Length: 347
Image (cartoon, rainbow, N blue to C red; front, side, top):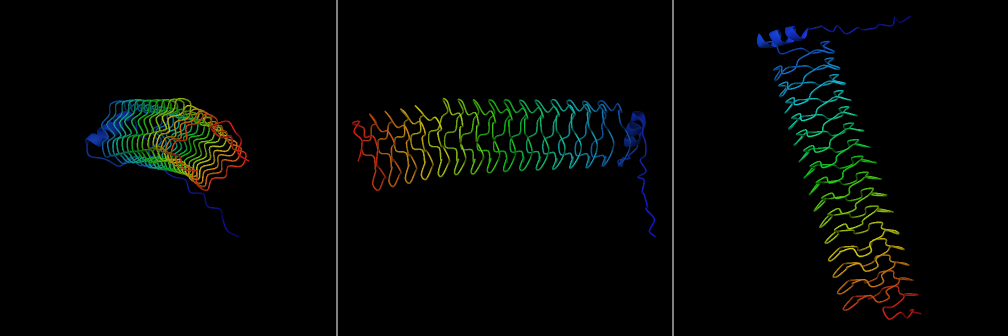
């Protein structure tokens, strides 16, 4: 018969004053300590070891926590407004509902941390590592995430209004129903990310990489996608009103029934893209590459297709009425039932 052994972790308890005094005397190890609700406002704990500590609802506002180690710590509901956590290790820490407004987390390490519902508005998160972290419903409005690592992170329903995501790593991240209105994701890597029902209106996505991303039902109204790479992305029922698509790469993308009317897509690469029943009425596709694209029943009335390459494209039952096709290449294209620029239907 095997006895069930239950191991109880011994947690030392410290008052706020004791922590400050011990640190001042040279102590740095406060691991596993129970300090829930402690008032450490403005305290200096740089480089302290606080792994596994309990600091739920503690007041650490304005504290100097540079390079401190909070691995596995509980900081749920803690007040960290204006705190300096640059270079701190918060791997797998619990920061849900914590207030980090205006905090400095430059180069902080937060893989697999739970930051759901936390307030990180106006925080400096430059170069921070949030890989695999949970930021569901978090407030990151106006936060600086330049060159931050958010790969595989969960940001569903998060608020990133006006956030800086320049050159950030967002590969495989989940942004379903997140708000990124006015966010700057210039040159960000968003490969394979889930952006379904995300609001990216007025966002800056120049040179961004969104290869194989899920952009179904996304709102890109007024967004700048110039030179962005959207190879093999799914843009089904996406909203692209007033979006800048010049020089965009949409190779193999799914644009079924998408409204691209009047869009500026000069020099865009749409080779192999699915544009079945898409609305391209009046679109500017000058010098665009549509080789092998599927344009069945697409509306191309009054579109601008000068020097456009439509070689081997499927244009069956598409409507090119009044379109400008000067020097356009239609070699090998399927044109049965195509409405020609003259209005005549090809046999």
